[in-house]
Image (cartoon, rainbow, N blue to C red; front, side):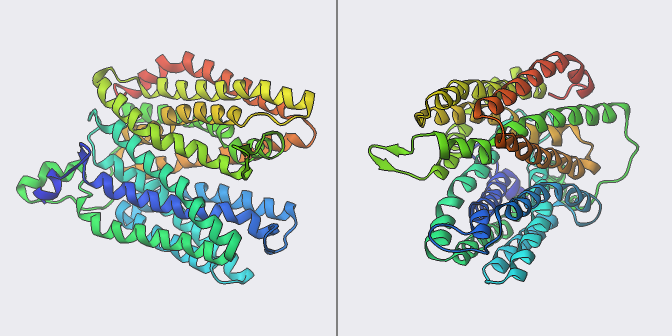
Length: 439
């Protein structure tokens, strides 16, 4: 075991590389398929799909994306109580791959079966792979936030590449080739996960490595929660609520901002026309580029690293700033009915990237630091519950566009996120007291 303990990857435990690649391929499969899902249900210009009405397709799409994250709650609970986190990640990956391959067969039954399998599999894999990242570090390890930032780069690398590979196969050749490609990606992730499991050595195992004793991948011994434990759980829950508000604004990318790109943004560059959907690659691209920068910043700051509540506040601040930036462009379009420069959206996504890197990877780290060991998977599920509800609220807010202009919807997002920023800034001191010394 000592050889595995000593191996490093970019200054971090070697196990981080295994989990980085696992999450990258899972996100490749998820975003690759998701890019095809709505168009497959309603049909596209290039080829017909299932022929669903837009209303029915929207209901299925919304229920699916929300369920993917909601299932993280029972997925975390099952891992905490029964499977253990490593086995839960593996089983989740198997179910996800089976779901994509099910959708590769052209029938309505296999379509619905595939969606159900992906929901179940993601519920097992998503919260528990993040939990495993937390086990590689002690609570006071200054590399911890930097490690989660690197891990988060893997998420966005998969989100960036998935649509690039799966969308041409699905839209231009055959829908089911695109779904199968998503399944192949998950299989590749599983292969490297099985090979790299030997590097997933929790810090509790590292401390006992010299004696040759290995702590099992099993639920921790039950002990009563202390007052500090309850305080930390409360702090994590409060921050998770503010994360929900963040995601409600951030996930406008798939709804109101997509419509703004399609209807109000100039879609030419150097005289060449491009699809409005390509804007969805802009924010993941910025995250890929800036994740190492943020990881270096958190590592360089060391003991002066900002607390989790302050980082959450910064995330909400950048989100509000992004919608404030796009407001003049929306008002110009509405006044002149002239498409605006694509640089407006590029600037918005850059600011949202800064907000995401302050909040999301730090949020994953925060949950693992503040949660007592035996409920960390469940608390990670609560974190993804906030993401699910954020997706739902984002769709609800985007529905305002039916009878309101872009500028009004973006103003709502600006004011809501700005108010949340101010409230959280005021709450930083009491939240830090609840955290009992955890940053």
